Length: 449
Image (cartoon, rainbow, N blue to C red; front, side, top):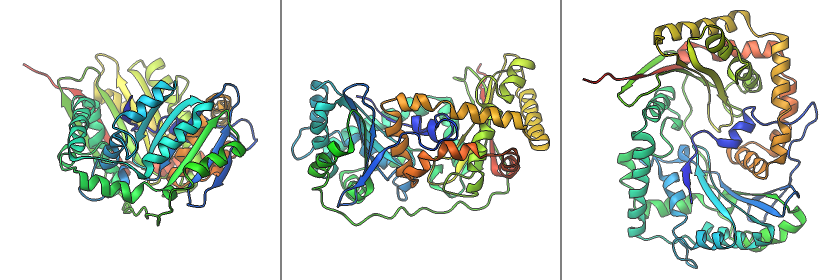
């Protein structure tokens, strides 16, 4: 089984940042049914009766940004330990039972949430619900088990971050971009703090955050709310309610100074240039700009027809790739990023000059009505793929609810994108693309010998 950190927010990020949406001017994407158990656990059902299969997901409203001082990585560490057994089951038994019944599973941690999911035949759903409900409150750990998994996580950090020049630079960019907000810490944690994890600290974190009132159950597939509700009440509903844990986070102060990072490493094979701006999200900052920024990102750098790709790659042939992306699906501040990789023989100075020229152009001349119309159509006509996916709705809705959005926010996304105007896109660009709230990063090859 794979247990990994999702630094990009996978399909949920695709959906909420414009990759997957609804069609036309009609509100509604997944048309889910919802209800809440007596202990506070929220339940979402997305019907898809194409095959007799369901995806069962439990989302917890806790991620790396909810960790305390010195606790970096504990949310992800606990994700690993959730497979170590309960009072009823031995370590690894959950996964073995699931595999014997033809299911598959995964789990992931982000800055804002932790999620566990299984995909299985609908006639085995009750088995999965019983096992997941069991480990919500009955996790059993030992000092030896914690120590063993600590070594696994440290090795994961070494292999995925410390041995990857791009990942090293991304950590440094986040630490520089956020002056105070906890997104500045890596989801996997700093190695010296991972080493301090012990049984007591992990169990305290588990008891603080893993409770039905802080959890969201999303089931998508060949199921109805009428059939799921009695099962949810039987397995999850009997878990005692717990006083909610407040998600208290510090605010990000105003920024006025640009920052520049240069990382050189002999392992770099492809140099890169990037600039990341502190931006509003759906929930934080100048939220009025969020939907317009999604349209801007699509026009400016989404795919081979975008401005950046056409100018730098196709016309001027100074880059092998170029684009932009915007991440508004966060409980805290968002990020608007530009990136490019130079063609062999092209200097980083020449590449940066070309990027600056495109930025100046979009800030002074703005976008056009035809660009906005095409971008909105592209974003909206992809809804069919989300509706066809067994996991798409579960991931999009679970991630949205876990950060503090509502089902209505997800379902209304097509209409909100549809109302974005040229004036709003241009205003958003001028409000966000300010050098004083950005980090420019260069990844270069270090010459040896």
